[in-house]
Image 1: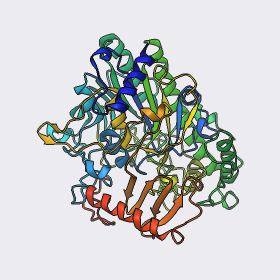
Image 2: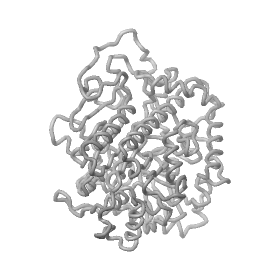
Image 3: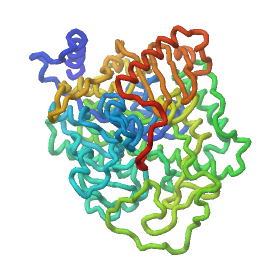
Image 4: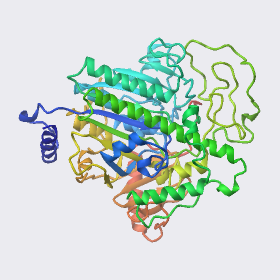
Length: 575
């Protein structure tokens, strides 16, 4: 009956887009919505998107749901989170770059008050709202006074929150850890004291707790939950037992792993059979001298995603245990492409900080806020070590997995996090909803282009909410996206506007099959994505009229949302 009422509402919404509701179907159950996001994962890392990493729980959601093959993020942590939360382009929300105030309204580094979050809108529709994980849409991390918390989750619509305000930090001792509005320590938390603290597990445990508490305390009310994992963002930290599971898995090296992923992508139907790998970016396997270090980086990275997947399995199990799974829409995605940043990998970085027999400082029991996301020492006083020869994984190390492995994560695409070629902006999107996805649609591939801006419109539609024009005395900017429910059901989205990108001067527009893209400070490149998803055949010189038209549309959008020329002035170190 839920599905039948849902289809009726969908048909009505397609005919009468102002509202879903009529009196005779007002009793239809609104779905719960669980939005799960990974951090710095590549397009092909999951098993159901061609990867060799063991992700059985996400693979199961995909097998019984819908996988989008052309879903897009914004290519960077903060802009993606701002866009996801608000349904606006990040510039409109005040976070066109990162957490620095660059002197322009589109680049203030804080969610502005001319936008509303999904949580704020769904609360109007009587949803309970929960969040676990990474916030990273404000530079105000000082809890000393109430005004500094004005853009924390509870002040932006969430009923409960457990997670970090900063963008990154140790998985064994995360920086800026907060419960609701209170800065806490994983080692002095009266509500949560596991035998071994690991942040990915803590995020999963609190998401499970929110689901269970909701079923006991608010069973008649739908909920929205945003689970924002920091895995597998640097530093490469994982539990020893999970790392051991991937020992030897990558001994064949970068190139062979990319080739194997491409073959699986083809067999899964996620890319065309004629797709070729883009040229290897970063070093080739033959050029690697410290192979133990490189292999360990990818083994830890895989273990981090494995642990995330285990957490997703626990969330799904709790939804099932509390009889809430059938009418819960679960959406899984990632914030940007694989990260090529050379964090801690330089020969001249902190390799000299070798582990000492005794810590230099006593353990710190209370909650604390480090001045930087990269600490100089662990909480128990051991120096944090970086550089080749320091194998990543443990709490006193701090590394990224490097450009060549990021190229593997983004198979078969070009570029990485920061850039707006396909490798930087392509994300899996898995939609799982037993009561809403019709029989025969399970395990389907949805090829229509879609974007983070569409998530707000989708949530508003499903929640039968009214997106406000005014909120707390402020005029609110209209939503930019479209409702994705028709695509989930296999129907056309009827998108009327192109999709746009800008980050650090890198820019793009997608309209139909055409994509116009530029890597700053380069010229425009033009690709027909329908036949060249890997962006190998630049058609700009052959289609000058298309370039002229699309570039004019991009510029009109850039002027409308406040894009400024790059590089912008920098007057704040917190990014």
